[in-house]
Length: 511
Picture 1 (cartoon, rainbow, N blue to C red):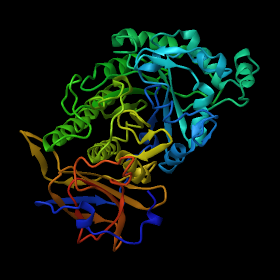
Picture 2: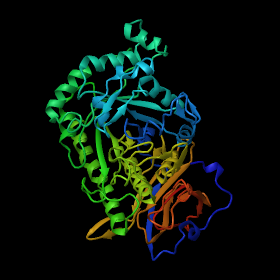
Picture 3: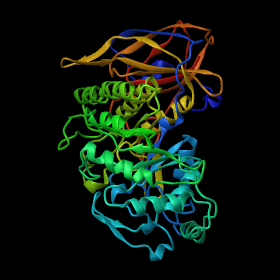
Picture 4: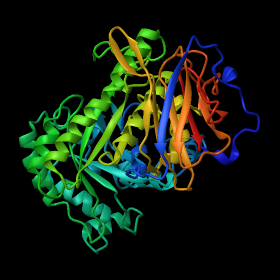
């Protein structure tokens, strides 16, 4: 979000929502701007690009000979949009795909690379056109750091160790010289390296004790030149499970910097019938938000275990797969996981980002699934055309929180309830950005009722609070290739004495 170039004409709250709201919640936001919490690591805004469906091939990669304008084979329109969003980190090549990926298949002349079958996702041919060199090209085009996921499930210790040497060695070893012969003289920098993925499931259906022994073995041989060693990530648990966090944090005494964790928001809470991406009523709106807000409990429970087993705070908790997951779109390959993206997804994204901010002391990195054309994507493509989803706009609006210093926030808000369950009607974040300005994000989860915001903030406020708002008249509003701006941020302003947060809206303002 660019606060310095807000639209000159500010829209009123009524125009922003497009509808009159039924009632108004009374919400108090309290904070002392002189107090500081942990830094919100920019890697909380990490992205995920797996070899899955049209996420990489077509979504990102079209090849240098494509009629679609590209740089080094990556389409310019998508790259430029992602750069505007300030992507800090990209995870690759999976996901489940990582534990069947053999890195040597993706180096050397493309016409000599083996064609494999992607057995996890759709049984399609995997040409290996995008391999190690191409992925680092993508990261460099984006100005992003990288999170590489190694193959523990079907690979070997030697294979993983040699991949690390290939990427990071500055010596005249055979592997380093092979990298040079393939076009890269200087070693790459790797921010994070994952030893396996979902080892409890698609990565090998292991028990945590068995995985712990394998982790120690593999990590022992991941050697790099001084100063080049990445942060090593253990494959952790998912959803309500805390066993993996407990076993790994108690029994891996060295060479582990963080533990991964996965949680997907399924409206129906059932994998067989997850729910429709765009056709839903308020009951399904609420069910989605109630389920996604379970992230608060899951984070709290896992972090409590880390605080017990790692009181020095050396281990990070990395939510490296999260987001909404709906039924496959009718008429498309189910294994490609293509789904549309509505205002509901924008609210889900903002709610989770607020939670990650709240737990920033331990949550140093997350990766939403996924960047392009897969699950809760930032961008959807259709041949040469592309659009930005509502979730994209949340990441753009919230970019001011990357590496910001959090400020403790007390938010006194009523609950939004249905069927005996409840979630906060309003959630929020407050932080001092790298630019020295203080930013407040607020999310109204209630699709019917606005919220009157009382700011009880010591430390001084601007006379007029300016920022952006994302909302729409309908819960199911979405951007399409015929109407790409149906859900897009609008300029917003308020004062400390007159601050109304419309129903089903997300606001980010500078204080």
